[in-house]
Amino acid sequence: MTPFYALTRGPVTVNTLFVIGILGCCLLTSGCPVASPPKYSIIRLDDRASAGESLNEHGEVVGQVLIAPDEWRGFVWRPDHTPKLTELPTLGGHYGSATGINDSTDVAGYASNADGWTHAIHWTESGGIEDLGALGVGYSAAMDVNNLGEAVGHTGYTDATRRAFIWTDTGGMQVIPGAEADTFATAISEASAVVGALHDEANIGTPNPPEGRIWYDDGTMDTVPSGLGGTGSIATGLNLTNTVVGYAANGSDEYCAFKWTASGGMHGLGSLGYCITDDFAFCSVASAINSSGTIVGTAAYAGAISHAVLWKGSHLYDLNDCIPSGTEWEYLDGAADISNNGCIVGAGYWMNGATLQRAAYLLVPAVLNKLTLSRSTVHGGSTVTATASLDAAAPCPLDITINIEGLDGIASVSGPTATIPEGARSVSFIIETSSVASRTTGTVAVSFGGNTRTKTLTVVP
Image (cartoon, rainbow, N blue to C red; front, side, top):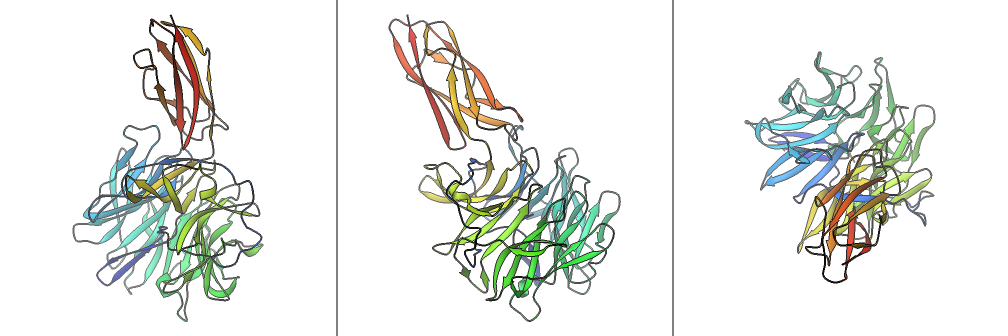
């Protein structure tokens, strides 16, 4: 469900899918940004260097966080958990990443062992971390897990190539039928269809580039050929209707985002009009698609950086235009996954004091738009009911920050936050006031996801 990154151990390269933000774009097509982009609230998941890679329908997020120099850990972030972010253990080594999560909070990923080899892992709250092993030369990585508990990824094989695998609790790790070649798997649907590619993406630009694949649960397979004018494609995500997304070469050997179906073929998704060239050119990458056909990914931007993007209908939106202005965020450089209820995860840069820090984010398609008070003027000793409201139902539990200024010792609430439950649009809290000798006016403020709403409260004798 995410774009890509390379982890090495000696001569072995484990290519996984993790947007780092060096990806680019090709031609500006009809999917260009429009005047009224959708609006999201943004939640920073941690202060440390981190990236979000996947999420489920309850707003639970997995990814990777730097806990010390050269010490990376997978994490799971749960909006209704204390603490919200849990660091996952490794297998005895110094490296780990969580790449997929299902609605039961089963987590897939990979972690290093004491010998430095990376193995696919499965984690649950009750069972802890499980080493899924490898089928051949000592490495493996799990990239996604569906609600059936099926995990997919790739493993080193005896002939030094990789094999796309599927893992189940009862059957263990097995090569996906039809993937008996140099293959890797990136995502699995709720119908057990799997996408990935044939051949190592490290060889992009060589005479034998990668070619996208979709493997169905009945053992059949479809090729996802490059239909953008070049040779080479990689499939990174799919939904229940087997609409596949990824990136493919165009006629200029630039890799650009696509969506594909078996009946309709391939369609380019466009870009922000820029391209980044390193060893080869990346233009745009589609990372994931949800049940409504909304797609997220990454596109090159001015200054050789990348921006997180959203494809919705016929439009391409820069997600940096979809979050509140004036926040701590400098820019969002990649979007890795989108849930069916429209939440998005990825990574971006924020100002941590004077330091530009890369961190995981969660975008929520609900904006704080109103604060009401039951009374704006009260006698000291009375209570006031305050209500904070969103413009849409909360897709997961959302914490609203409460602050009262100018009424120190006169007005207070039971805690610094109030939680809007999943599915609700508002939350109410009680403000307790004390007796005053003279008329005193202050401000009640609520904040969430980059937006703040205020109301004046006056306490009289």
